[in-house]
Image (tube, rainbow, N blue to C red; front, side, top):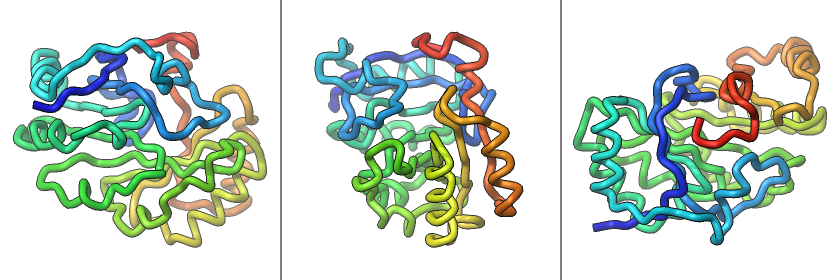
Length: 222
């Protein structure tokens, strides 16, 4: 039985992604292999972050008891969790449950995209202001599917220009969902819209983190 370090597990609405606004059960794991300048869960990525040890069975049962059909595995970084496949296999046997993995783009998703009734991915591409762009695993772009999402989080105009380069270089429009989000409070939203208009960025969705609008941006478990 696989055991995971879970820093929080809670029911809320999804604040971003394809199922934004829908009820979701969040399972947040401890630890990340990256440390972005704007990370909004730095408390969870440290090895010192308090956690509860939970088995794949316990996590699965917690979700089933909640009655919620959407599950988001987040962190930290879910794909560095030991034996994450065991948890995904357990969920894959229940076709009523939709599992999404939020991943930072530095780890291969290839094998998991081949799972029967497997998860969808919301995969970051870390733009320059994150200071983590050099860690991106570019081979992942080959394995994205129509139900997956690439998310670009922009802090400034330089990030926006880099977004445009990556979207067209890897022909992402039509291959997967492409989302553009602001670093909360760090970039003018009107500037982002004007950039999209100027560059005719058809197929790119501007998305705000609605959980940070509803609640205090620093609040946990929401």
